[in-house]
Length: 86
Image (spheres, rainbow, N blue to C red):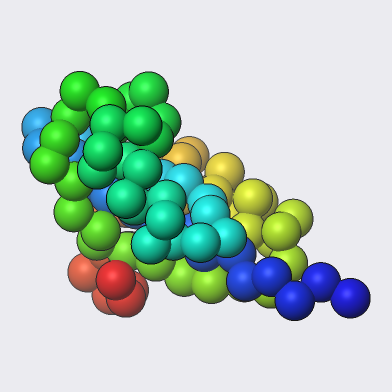
């Protein structure tokens, strides 16, 4: 039985762009991003702000949701952020 909780998250980068990712330990992942040791995309785009998150107990579901969100337009992502949680 898998007891992990997967968190899908969106960050607003210092240049205004949005980054979407998935992690099992969101706070540790955010610390890595903010230290410049996270995804290559976020390294040169500090500071970062957590603007959206949702959780799942299923890794596959979290990864599928990540792909769904990455396929959204910027306007759709902003609408999701406006009605979501962070």
